[in-house]
Image (cartoon, rainbow, N blue to C red; front, side, top):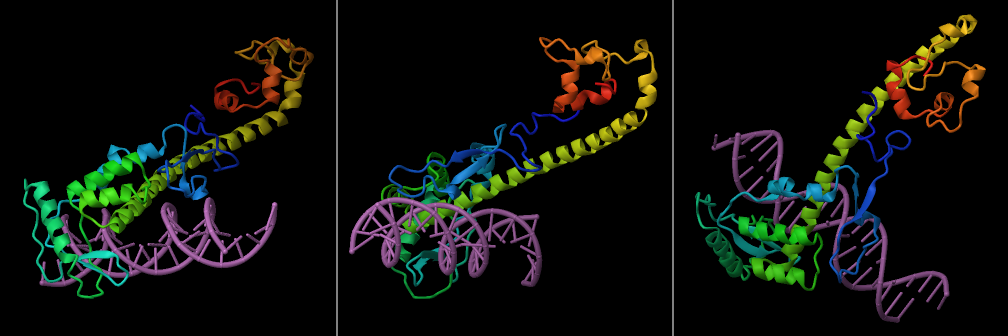
Length: 278
DNA sequence: AATTTCGCGAAGATTACCTCA
DNA sequence: CCTGAGGTAATCTTCGCGAAA
């Protein structure tokens, strides 16, 4: 019972502050930028909250795209960025059991065709990545969350039959989603810590009140014969400020008096179950 | 050596489209 | 059929870093 240090083992400093472990997001060699950039680090809490947790299977599953095999036309906007359009063509649902490769191939063929289909229309249409494309991108993301622009991006784009820009965008969005998930996890963790600290604070307040009440009753307490003084169950010393407690053996591991002058959380934890003198 | 400028890529915020209940 | 919510590709803006001038 009481404050469990394992819950906030990282040490919450000054209220809700904490001591995060800084984890550098692995960057591809050759990516000249910002290994040391503050924004490129992920906060992780020692017990279990790591980027790995978030990027693990459980979370990744939610990122797998739903099946889709709509009729998609590909075109470019004014900036050269690619986009897809189904404006003039009905989407068709992917039939259960349909071949993934076929879907990819169909989309890919449309991509190739529509590369030339530049009608200059400015509508922004969306591509829906196929399962296979998403899976490959996920796989690549697991290895490196950032792209080597001149190599990995090109290679992936070629493999997926996408434009390098699309691969780049996917990685950007993927990193954003990862961070969002991590933030949610962190938020939950901090909420729990906050609740724990609130409880602890409440309990300590109560304890202070008890000690104050004890102090008020102290004159009477001091008049009692020594034999009636409360004995500390752990160190078997008489509580109070008398010479017995003051002349404590320094070799004793947990001197009764020192405990009272060196408050430790665990001491307070168990306090309600022991005599008030402890 | 210090400063300025420029290009690049990443993050963050936002938009727009699509799907589904 | 309509609608709102959620997911996500795409776009825009801002920022930091390294290299060159």
